[in-house]
Length: 122
Image 1 (cartoon, one colour):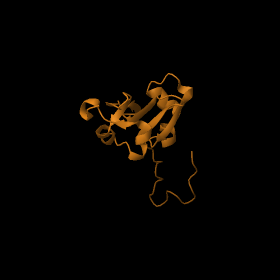
Image 2: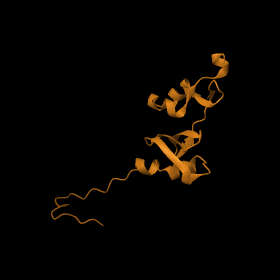
Image 3: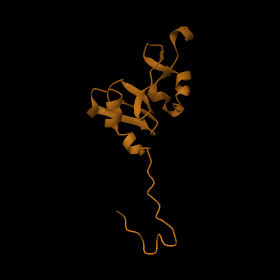
Image 4: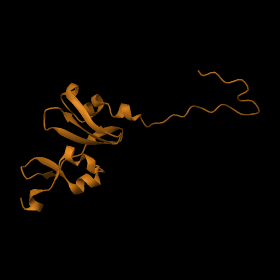
């Protein structure tokens, strides 16, 4: 328990209680082990975070094409499903989905943005 400074709480004043927040510090929320576990990655020791701001995370396993994009919702990380395909058939996000999920443009090369073959005529 913290000591009260001499003279504090006099004249009818009471010490203010400590402020508690339900928001976790970004470093805890962005821990690779936590994100890996919550998105169902089977190789948690190999999972690396490329970007995490506490609300959006991009990560994966080095040396693979397995990059996940997740958002923090209701106390845990949830994968944002890819809804498009590149010209070569690789899963990707459409630009509309990327924007709707607030994926910043500087991450587009990490998360792969493309279009659906049916929309683009590929």
